[in-house]
Amino acid sequence: MTFKDFELHESLQMGLSDVGYSKPTPIQEQSIPKALEGKDILGAAQTGTGKTGAFVIPIIELILRNPSEGTRALILSPTRELAQQIDEQIFALGYHSGISSATIIGGEDFSRQANALRAGVDIIVATPGRLIDQMKVLDIDFSKINFLVLDEADRMLDMGFLPDVNHIIDKLPKQRHTMLFSATMPKELQKLMKSVMKDPVKIEIEVSTTSKQVDQRAYFAPPRKKLGAVEDLLDELDWTSCIVFSATKKGTNELERALKKKGINAGSIHGDRSQEERTASLRAFKNGTVPVIVATDVLARGIDIDNVSVIINFDVPRAVEDYIHRCGRTGRYDKEGIAITLVSKADEKYFDPIKKKVGDDLKILELPEDNKESKKDSKPANTKPSDKKNNAIEPAENNKKKSEPINIDKKTVTISTDKAGKVIVELKNNTPKPEPKRSEEKVQKKNTKIEVKLKEKKPNKKKEVKKEVKNTKVWSKQDRPDRIEKAKDRKQKVRKPSKGIWGLIKSFIPKFPK
Ligand code: AMP
Image (cartoon, rainbow, N blue to C red; front, side, top):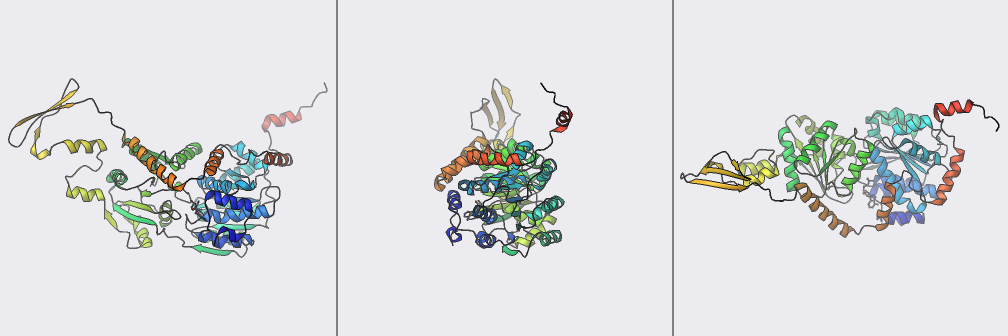
């Protein structure tokens, strides 16, 4: 089956070929025809299966089949990053169709978002909290909405968004198509599902399991050894980009600092960061300038990043679901990946249910570094790269008695005796050799790899140009004069928000004739 079989609008076909989709993924194959028939859809699909396309493609197609003014679709997402990612797909797929969209998410310019809402974009992608805030000050026209998508609904429930979601749904027309995607179906969600959907078609694609393309490993690592273990794993594995998951925001900051201290070019992302910082970190990670990102579970769900070769669970996730979602960041779609979990004694109670779910293949192994240690001379767990070098050039300790090093005129003198009692004087020049920094080497190494990959993939230049445009705008189609005119027309019709106390006072001051 190919996308041609769905007889999609020509402009959408062009969008699909721009992003390089020729065949639908299994979830798309099942959901697109049903959604085009106007059926409600209840989807349970693993992340990385093409879930976003499963709802974005039919929504764009149906808008094109029945064009009309006003906002036609609302997509609710639990996290800002997921919302941005969905919006990016709408932008890419709907580029030739002139479909407009806006992300309404926390941490970004409120008034720019309000302008986009007033202009009446075709599709709103929002996190529930910010949309509610906008609804408090704006009279948003939801009357034309035909499509509602609740993505990662179980996550929205976990994050306490259910009351907000219900409040938003109350304002939408009752006649609409609803698509709900969720990895699990807890009771509260079943209740919501029954109240918002009509006889939904159920589509299930391998729910709640990790992808077969992900090589899962677990190593025993006491807390004090975890940092060194990450460093060693990054040295030994073949990777292009790596996410290190931490349980807490504080832990994420500390780990980022510690990795940087070790010369590893790392960024971080968590809920306490400003949206600007979050977006910048994610962009640097996605484009390969910062190959390691330390993150809380904010990055665990639905975020699609190309070529994440390794994820490391620095802390064992507290729930099996979180483990599955973290693993889902690698081995995306048709690629392979590695997921490593560092398990301390205290972590074992969280690891046991994960092991039960994944199966006996996931055994806790000894760290590769520990194996080496037992064969070689032992070395402290958190040895710095520079220490490693120093250890290598020094003769074995048991053969020598050494004096304390003495510094004389930029030189270090060490006097020692060997087994036979022979006196050895070592003179070391203190002027350091200009060595490249480890992080720079790593970036160079990673960038070379990325370059090779890009050459192989022959990136679509058009798409890259579009992405650049996208990054600078809230509303993607502002550069199209026809849409701007349309938007302006709509803007006249939409009620404007109050202009504050000064506006109110001014409205009471009578105008005197000149
Ligand atoms: P998602 O599960 O929506 O996050 O998608 C995971 C990855 O699969 C993303 O990189 C998509 O761009 C990619 N993808 C989705 N649908 C297709 C398709 N039909 N053909 C090729 N890649 C796809």
